[in-house]
Amino acid sequence: MELKSKDPWTIFSPFFKQVEAPARTILLQEGKISKTMFFLEKAACVPWVNNDGEEITTQL
Image 1: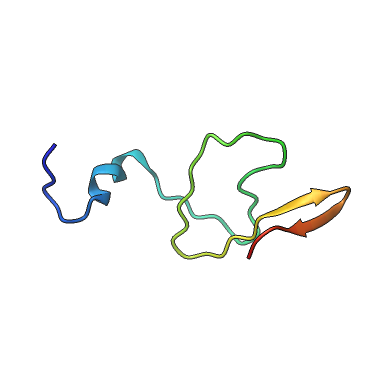
Image 2 (image 1 turned 120 degrees about the horizontal axis):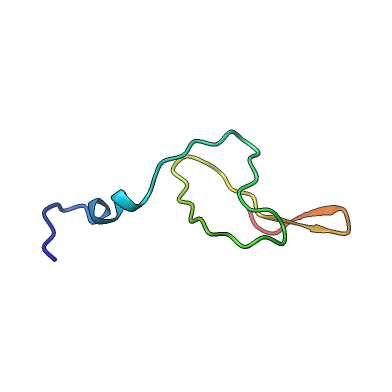
């Protein structure tokens, strides 16, 4: 396959769609399996887990 552009993203971009989500949107519910891949352009993502009702942040 020949690249016609210097940006390799052009090959993959037809397989993705851009979605805007408001702040505090939960992208994946606890116990669920994701069938979606997310690339964050302008955002901060705070992964957390629920430990007996207590929210524990796992990374910042």
